[in-house]
Image (cartoon, rainbow, N blue to C red; front, side, top):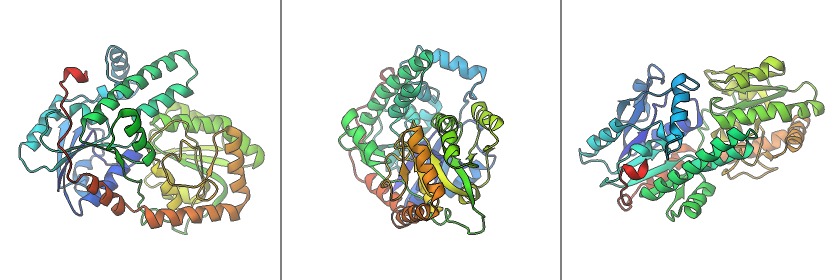
Length: 412
């Protein structure tokens, strides 16, 4: 099968959840299929990202693109201008007629079997008149993320903005899910939402995978019995919100139960609001980008996932479990993963509950070890990327050609 895979970025550095999932999926798919990777490229990828793309694609096509850096003058201008649009900003900013032309050019060769649109954002550039099957690969239900942003905001202006973006995203997401020939989600829960809320009865799901050969304890890193760790891209708003909530509301409660506890925040591009956490509290450490997260995870006594906003599934949880670290998460943080509270991890959604669960594992090494080993056994036995890719390729098999087309005006 020849797969035309559409994306908004090159994958290196492979340093955030969406890139990791795509990178591992494509590496596994390439063992049996041919992959043409067509992406927007704004120059922000690693200098060798184009060359390293040979790890996951047989052919790479980059469409030059200019994006506004976050918090730049152009960024704020685009946000204001978007107020007059029907599209959510998170999608509208990726409009590229050149990408649409490039898609037509590749398909004109006549040898593509399926077009996969990776994430919702590039779907804006996918023509509605394609003569080959199309798949929308949904790493999240995007409207759910924006609804949760709205729900946790207290500032009236922020609430108004996030409600507006949520409603726009919901309309656009429903439209695109119904337009593509098949929708593949990353959890059964997300697939159910797409079927029931968006009226897409054929929506299916693939599980989250983990590279268990890479994520395995080295046995050479001394463990700190009072250290917690959080990993994730800190320029993703749900991660920023979650770790600020943890530092402000949960960490002081943990410290009252376990004196001397510390937390290390590992992830790229921490904003000023996260850097400020370390500036005011010496028990909080912010690393920024690191070459390898594994030593930080292995050193910690427990892995925390205090997310209040999110969708899809969290790769970081399976990675921590493969590293044999006990996990404490909110229900949202562990959403969509086949995990049992009290067996594979501890779940808590209030500051007091999260603090008590964390303190319980820090204070009981035997219980922490049992939970970590049960979780490690689960992910090692059932969630390799080869298995996930086999399921994905089955879903990309014979299907009807894409749904009825929409004009450009319908998608403005």
